[in-house]
Image: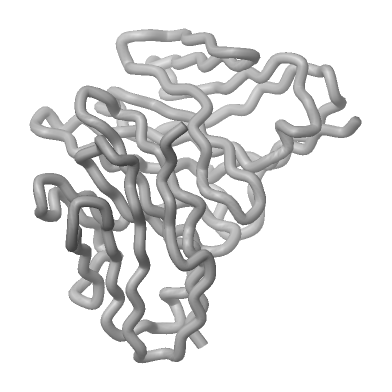
Amino acid sequence: GESVGLHLPTLSVQEGDNSIINCAYSNSASDYFIWYKQESGKGPQFIIDIRSNMDKRQGQRVTVLLNKTVKHLSLQIAATQPGDSAVYFCAEKGNAGGTSYGKLTFGQGTILTVHP
Amino acid sequence: EPEVTQTPSHQVTQMGQEVILRCVPISNHLYFYWYRQILGQKVEFLVSFYNNEISEKSEIFDDQFSVERPDGSNFTLKIRSTKLEDSAMYFCASKGSYTDTQYFGPGTRLTVL
């Protein structure tokens, strides 16, 4: 279910571990998904994205997995570092069948804390 | 690397006053957005802007809000008569053609007293 207010899911890992952050999306018609990292007092920073015609995409130390059957998205961070500590948001872009101007619908966010 | 910039970083205003938040999108981008984030909550879409007109807006974006691209580089969000509940971080974003990746600015923290 969705959390409201300050009760964000949290993930606490040790430096060097792999992290997996999960996200459930709601719109089966969404055709594009994106992960952002947000550090305290800053704007969302692009990490990685994926289109609905793919189920996996890899970047540098990050991998996004998309499971359209269960409407689930995950972000895997390899060898997590203290600098990875932040709030991570998934977002989806719907496809209404016509022109899409790109409105993103954000998930609730997950707080990742990496301990040295 | 090109980035979206926003000014001011923090704006404090009295309830009922007008505020204008400013953004300079990435220079070759054609699609512009405003989002807001109330403290501790998720980012919410306000409005999208393309070809000098609003292309989509949310229920939050009522008659008190307006957007403008006054020149070739700036993109502004105006709130005509601020309310306490308008207090939030306001983010500008932009994207180019043939891509869905939106790049966000650092935000303006609006505090309405």
